[in-house]
Structure formats: structure tokens, C-alpha cells
Length: 241
Image 1: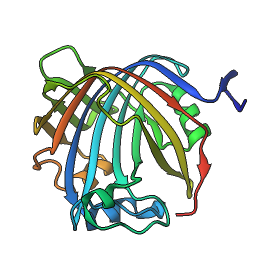
Image 2 (image 1 turned 180 degrees about the vertical axis):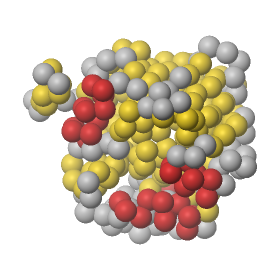
Image 3 (image 1 turned 45 degrees about the vertical axis):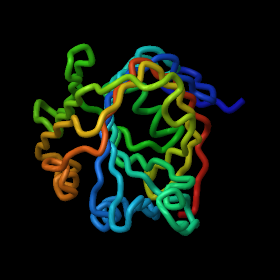
């Protein structure tokens, strides 16, 4: 059993999240601009349609898990498996895609160290207030009182039990090393809808990147909320992109 020492505590793999809640929105963005954002990773964005990539914004409240309770915000892009050319058609272009985690602020030091040490996730400390109780779910990311980004999503219609991706490869790149982490999700109380997201960008460097992708004026492809989410994170392995 693989284990890591984090701030004097032993964290064993796989890491399990027993309860979390999520709000998210997915956007179609120019593939060239998205590729420029993640070029440092050596990975290539997936293009469900020629010239278009997918960027996801997600905020997560972790209530019960091996890394303790905390808030998290993620900017991610769908990417192709390293070294595999795209296949014809939309399904072919999406076969085997993973999620490249470009930015991952959190509000607790323990998960910061664990995420960077175990998986190479690009975590940094921020103030991340969120409200998941209202008719519109809201989250903000702030540094020293200055807002980097605000996201609001409107929950949609209930989805059948078991809806959602059961597993995906999560990719990260930290200190020049690109890694892949097998990631299993078990969602319940899922709601989704077309559109339904509002994004307000501040003056953080990542906000400038997202503004360059047009996210401050784009309509979301879909928005989703998950009332209860369980997750399992396996160990990371280095990949040659």
C-alpha cells in the first residue's frame, strides 16, 4: 500500500472522498487558444468539433474525505490521451479523453500539500466562499480580498441515478512533470441543463487566460450540479506527452 507523509499525517492510496457537492459549467472555446494555455503540459486538447475545445469550471465543497473538509475551484480542459491521434467523428475525437487540471485553488493547507506532493496538482491557497443552498449556486475565488473569478450556475432537471462519468484520467503538470491519475466518480442527486452559467472575471493571470478564451461572454454548453459525490484517487504516474 502506497503512503505519503503529509504534515505529520499518513495518507494512504487510494485516497477516498466520501461526500462532496459540485457545481460546474462546460464551455466550447477556440482550440488554438486553449492549446496555447495548456501548451506547457505537452498535452493536446481534444476537439469534439474541429477547431473547438472544451473548458470546464467547477467548484467543489468536500465535506468528508481522507484529506479533510475544504473548498476547491478547478479550471480544466478535455485532452487527448498522450501519443494517440484523434479518430474520425465526434465519438472518435472523444474516445479516451481525460481532464487536464490547469488551475486548482483550495482553501486549506493540508490538501494543498497533499495535492501537490502526491499527484502534482497545481493547488494554491485562496479564499473560496461558496453557496450551494440557494436556487442559484455560487462560488468565488479571492486572493487578499481581490476577486479572481466568480461563477454562478442554475441547477437543471434531475438526471437518472448513475448518470455521469464513472471514471476518467486526470492529468496535471507541476514543475515541468506531467502526470496521469486514475480518478473514479460516483455521483448522485445530479441535475443538468443547457446554458445556465454566469462568469465574472477579475485580474488574476488565470482570469486573463479565461478572458482570452471568451468565457466572460460565452454561453455555457451545459451546467451541472451534484448533491452528493464520492471519488477515489489512485496514485499518479509520470507520462511522456
